[in-house]
Image (cartoon, rainbow, N blue to C red):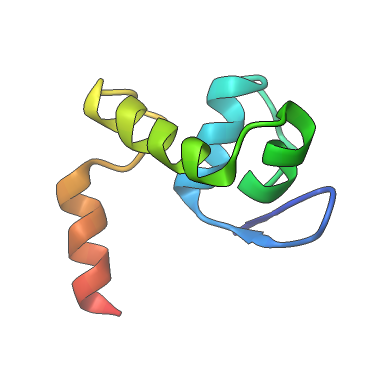
Length: 75
């Protein structure tokens, strides 16, 4: 599990993928959506929409939708 280097929040794989997609694909340290939102002055909700948009485009940094839905049922 990854943690935000700015605030220490635990991050999901999709949140790590978002950081890699919009900041640096080779990153090994990450910022959570809240901290990315503050840095880029983009609403957190827009960042969440970006995750879904990139997922639908087939970006491999994000878990496929079927896998994501399956994880929800397991919890």
